[in-house]
Length: 413
Image 1 (tube, one colour):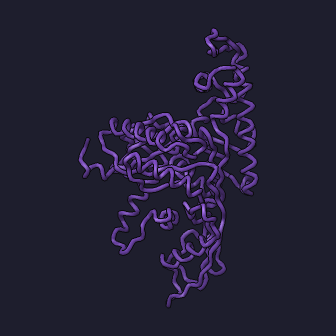
Image 2 (image 1 turned 90 degrees about the vertical axis):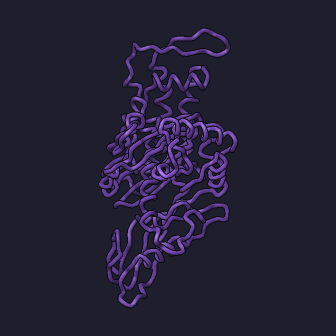
Image 3 (image 1 turned 180 degrees about the horizontal axis):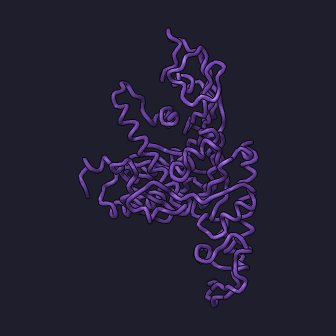
């Protein structure tokens, strides 16, 4: 392994999903672009829909994924950024208002911090904790829609924020699993926020865009409007539900159903050649069977349509669907299935595209698929946070970054 002085330059992202645990190691190159130097993965065990059920099994998955990434990169991992998802995560809007009381009535970083703190002074149940306070926009006196009020003059400052909370037990169990694996966590990040770093542009966020990350057990949604987060949600459906439908419909094992889905699956029946056949392994020692791919597609089509309809209901519920000028960006391993984009556009009735991680070098061919959107985005998020912290090391009495997992500064950026 390389020395610790070099290891400090790297950023490590850990994505613990329902079906797969992925670790990615990266570093900034001379142009400040992320260079992927190590990738490792392992089957996820002990986790269901983003909630840890068995810490020891989860620890084993983390260690295996990290060891593979270390072997490929030659670096030794000591700390990492961890992605977090699950139906326990909730988003809500909030507003804060303060008076600008300094002598010059000029808004400084101190006023911005105060108004964001005022916005997060909402009633949070004892069993939940704040993960992110995301600034959408500010108002100064009668001026609205301000992105950065620092330097402006006024007597009244208002902040419109989006607060994301998670169940304390689930958050702490994830942290315990990382620490029990022998690593230090640098941050816990809501998964779709990380994914957006890799697959959505700033222009799309300004125009209005929805990031939909369909994972194994859950589907994460985050909607951007005017450059800020306007809505977030987690649905309890994902690729595993498609696999289970195939397993039941074709009377085959879950393992075989997953392989069939990945190699022969299509989300839209009309896109399948009626003459194409597929071999289906049987259970109980019986001989494999042949069936038409359209029969397989019918099973997948029904479930994918249901998932897309659930997503569409969330888009409507947000009140922002008609303002999504940049449409919907799909991420997650399920989106690699042929017909996924067509299935989405058919239900949403607005433009959609598949999100491919961009602006990375190194082992980019390995991660250039929608299933790595979260991992690569988490890496970029971590790199941005590391750079921001490095610029602020001179601050005295800097509070613990993870005391309550409240990062006012990183979410204001």
